[in-house]
Length: 627
Image (cartoon, rainbow, N blue to C red; front, side, top):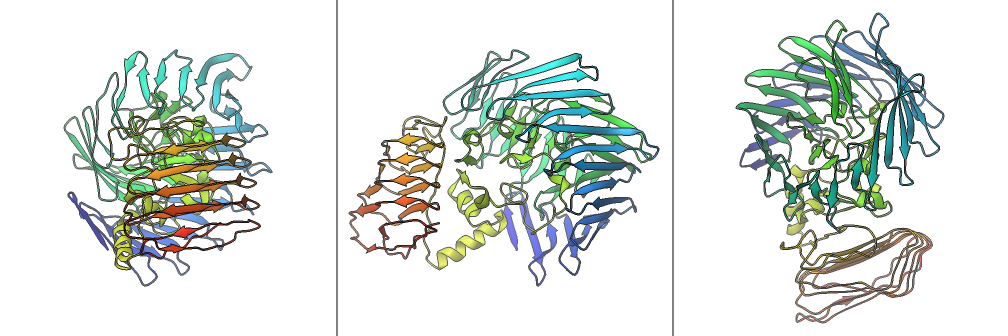
């Protein structure tokens, strides 16, 4: 299978079991894959024909990684398949312990002589939030305080005797934007959570929610909203949206990625003919450059805290503030994997963190462009499309640039899984399982809905079109803040674009809405209600293309829901999804079209739900499924 863009062609070959056996990137670099009898990846062959070998136990846990120079990393597990021990190529050993609630409570890395390289002990509150993090290397304690939405509001660094070394504080608005911190930086936002003023300087955005300028930098994006320039840094991507080149200060760096795993891995970095190769097991292990090998050591969040040479001597150390800005380091090694580096997040010299889907600024404590994941309607804090880690970067990271993940994901062993370029938005779950609502291009949404990787999408679409099945847009965006908030055709994030007129409501638990109306040339209405929410009436009209969705959680009730359209409609889809124990008393849909009516009524009942609905299509057989 091949996919081609203006930069070149990507090619994959498969075996009889549909496993990727070779991958040729845009530059012609070939990566090859071999598997054991039960389908685990057993050998990864780099473009220069060097290889890394993988071994597993009877539970499919990765237990041994051997690279081309016979450098070995081993993993040991407890009866619950949790990693409890690691040995690395520098001779260091890691010991990890967990509590009865499966939470990591300590992890200690020591040299072969027993000296502590890095070590941490973690204390949690009843909500499993880290409230104290003890750093064994210097006997300091990081103490955290949270608000009732689990956003970190204070971090206090203390000596072992309890004396205070420093304090960070954070204030948030109702939408989860940081409005103040201990440095007295001034943050101001518009109604769409875009940063308008930063420390007294104006910040501007384009209509797609991409930051285009701030007090220090100018940003440019391509038609796919990918960052292609920030000041003197120029970026290039392949047809699968993977960054393959960076040019800065007359230095050109090219990247070769292994994208046939759930979390893409940077295998080689070439800068002015100098090649650096990276080795992975349960996350990043180390790198080889100019015949020198370095081993990485991480904290709970997967951020690099130390780097050692082949003998186990510490050459570099790193410390970060709460939101990931490097505030102290020793050593001068060219290390690109800093904050969340274990999971492949690259920190560029301009300070931005490349988190695959988009870029994060630890300085501003937020992403520079909007998330294509509009958020999780059952968790309002996720609806801010610029906020990082839901305001809790102590316990969560975002290596995908799409959604917050627990910081210690590498404590589980199954990192390879299906050979897909990447999975949205969790390492272990599909986006449907996580209940996220997406707002991207039509192509992006349908690709995500089908669970397809980018390279397979066009093939799927062609097949669907040949079968003449329906193809519908599903724009589901959460505008600005949560609650009674409307984005009109002339305002909001999509003003001036083809998607102006989009109107949405996101309602939390025990919220109520008496009426909602959206109109426009391309108007899509969406009402989503969480548990114990009530909707009395909702009316949506559209002049061209309409998709209305009413999603009600458990114990939700809707008395009336009506959708009307008066126009020539080629494709029309009306969805109602009802949770368990829900009552839906009435749902009606009417249309007067020049093509004439073609009405079909269908009833399908979910678990303990009572539903009455009318579905109609126009020349298409569209089935209505209730969850």
